[in-house]
Image (tube, rainbow, N blue to C red):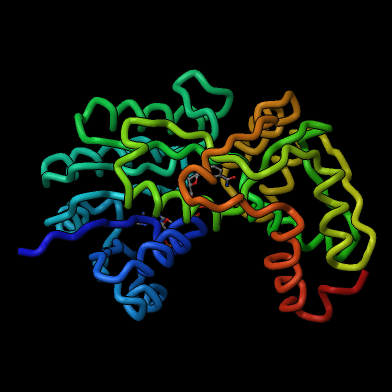
Length: 299
Ligand SMILES: NC(=O)c1ccc[n+]([C@@H]2O[C@H](COP(=O)([O-])OP(=O)(O)OC[C@H]3O[C@@H](n4cnc5c(N)ncnc54)[C@H](OP(=O)(O)O)[C@@H]3O)[C@@H](O)[C@H]2O)c1
């Protein structure tokens, strides 16, 4: 049976979709994706990837997806159960003979970190280390794509609300994270490393708001709110208690400089300078605004 070079989980998400596009641009590479909804993932098959339908929580489906796989690119959604879910997948990968795991982790993952997401990623990293499989841990900073959740206030009021005070963060475009993940699959050079992935500059939310405003040709100002208010704002969008607490805890940490550092890890992996906030505003925010219904665009 021919080997599958890489199995990607979470391939329809922010990072996974870019990682798959990058991997599938390599002619001859055998790429498989475990997806919950094949209709949503048809583009992966169109690019030459193989789809296996199933949920990460379904051991039989995960076992099916793991057959013949050399490298697992393991992306799991953020949740209160992420470490438990990832732990089961790691056991199945080991049993199936997977040789290497490239794990999408999170900034400063550690079992004693300041947020439960940080801690859960720390637990998962330990499980991978203890499995004996080769590994690369990619620990990205705050995603620029998180800003898409603020489109309503940016467009409707010219305001960017956040709970991080004046804390600077080297936020990163998920397209760079996806490219870095693909690169870590394709080379052995970084095996055994935990790499903190940052964007090119560490900046505060005032500068982020200014960059977005310049691109949109209007004034956008940053409004600092207490971390608790930032958490409650996402509750209004229907997110659960765990996520609300994560937003509060990350906001507090970032306000104190948790993300205020720049690394050259993306360039080392991909050979490309990571995208800056101006590029993100031009290539992602601006088209998103144009696709909004006119009624949402009145200032
Ligand atoms: N947001 C940040 O600032 C940040 C920063 C650093 C690290 N991270 C980490 O990044 C990871 C999330 O990456 P992302 O933003 O690319 O993900 P995402 O856009 O939220 O997408 C989640 C992916 O996981 C899939 N998925 C969800 N539940 C599943 C299940 N039960 N079985 C199978 N597939 C499932 C989704 O599939 P469907 O399409 O079927 O829903 C989707 O492909 C998390 O581990 C998070 O901690 C986030």
